[in-house]
Length: 297
Image 1 (cartoon, helix red, strand yellow):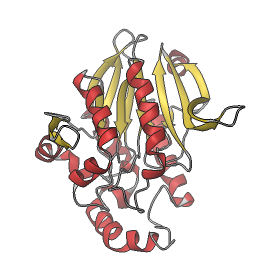
Image 2 (cartoon, rainbow, N blue to C red; image 1 turned 45 degrees about the horizontal axis):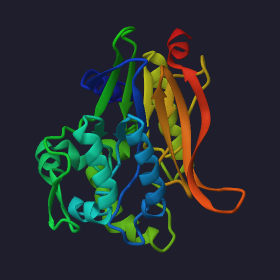
Image 3 (spheres, rainbow, N blue to C red; image 1 turned 135 degrees about the horizontal axis):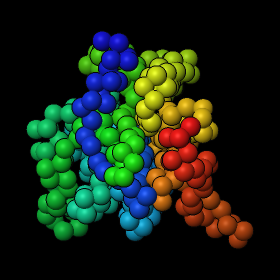
Image 4 (cartoon, one colour; image 1 turned 180 degrees about the vertical axis):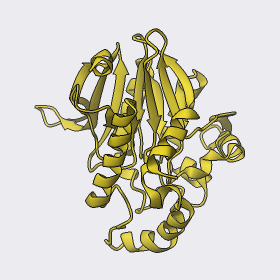
């Protein structure tokens, strides 16, 4: 199946969610939460992620995680990941209780596409402080894509991970996962980069982004992805392909906000006040731009 047909199929089967100009949505991806060891790429930004997500929780945002939230190629058990990052999962569970959490699976957590897996492994977690099990995401559905549909204009935004434009990480995902776990992960721990990764190979990254961008243009479809770890925020009239970046940039995380009918690319990082004290702050990298301007272009 060609990339074009693959993405068109994703669009056709996407899970629909209504939104309007009053909606507040934060889209982040590629957390790659691990088991808390020195191979856990999320570990360095876990405090930034928690601070950012708590801000969005307090301010009424819906959190949409755009795939590869958990590193389930390198690690066998999501229970170990939940235990290592129980604070983040606890916070996400608060979003879920208020119907403000949606997850999409990517290639590194593709096992979540099995409803039995996601509804049993993600149902609850053991809290050491209360010495009891606490509800996590009971009954959660984790689709391949979400289609945001404006209640009034009917304009749509397709959200998917983006690995569908990457043959090795899509149709050969089982082989890729095997190689990552047993070949590339041990080599990466000694400093050798995985050349098959779109996030670490610029040539591959450019090819994947070009395919996503071309499909978006040909189908006149607003598209937001992750996968490549590179933020993309086009100017009005240029394109309709966006990328939220990742949560494992060196010293920062990036995401895409949709609020008050606008879209922005934001960065969260540890920042310094004039008195040299540290804090976690938010910076707008691009935007805000009215969504209607893109749809009218």
